[in-house]
Image (cartoon, rainbow, N blue to C red; front, top):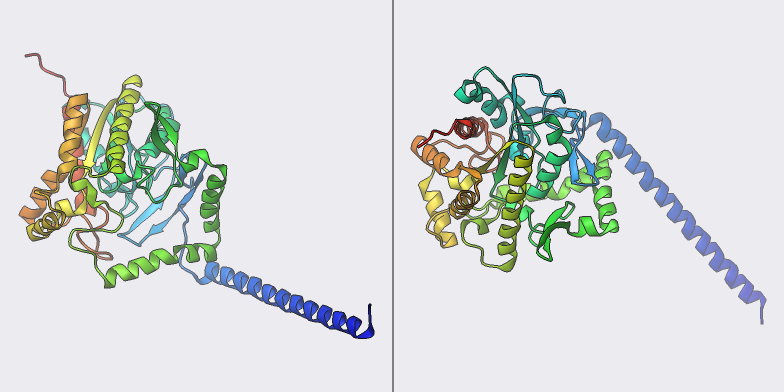
Length: 403
């Protein structure tokens, strides 16, 4: 039975609910206003945000065409992205007569945001090849197709979409053994917003959650598009800032660098690592076939990890002892052997760089604003690597003498 007391109680509860909704509305408006003020403040007074990367429905992400700005987190370089999403100048699609073109694919070592473009290894390689007898009279033109964080599957897709239309005469894959094997494994790689090649019914096919799940792809897209907001970008990068702070105050064990894999220094001990090797080798064979079909030469430049080329023999010995290995060159020896067995030119950069670094006590990795002996190649690393790659390309092009 509805009584006056019941009606009064309902009225009081209704007023309470209305007041709660009003308070929530005021709070929500306040949060939105605060976010808008923070967004405007960051855009006006915050540090420059060139925003080099964007979502890519095929590769996961790529460089944003037309982006430009300074990168000063590691080293320093002015970065300009061309119309095809390459950290490079624009090149004519039609290859000029008398031009020898080299497409260079790889990850952040190849993109090389840490230095000016002319100091990168592919620019050094281009300049050095001008003196190659096999290219006498030709103009050498290197195209940088490297993108930060890429695995070999993404590099193959980049070559297919952008590289081949420039009709390169050679392809150089800068293979960073520190994380490329992991990047190629859907089981080992943490960032799965990328395509993977996986074995299914004895064939190599594209797979993984990025390929198989539309919902996962939408989540990946949201991750990149949120970076157009300065506030969301700052919040998204907070974990990286915290990890960097912790790394400075709690240094990792000697020879270990966050983001790199110690498992490359010994034969694979798990099925996931064995599959990572198998898939990687299958993709190298795929690149060999693709380059042959396009009438181009193919070179794998095996970029060593920072600890392999550390100038301190004590540091490398401690790493060997910690890992229980005799040396740190398992991956390099195996890649070289695989190349010999399958007719793929493989250039091992780690061993000669280690010898030079320990003889001259110099660092090929690191910068004054980071830590020497870790991270990416500095100017000396790019100079040394570019010269060695140029020599390997020149040897590869030299006419074979008859026995």
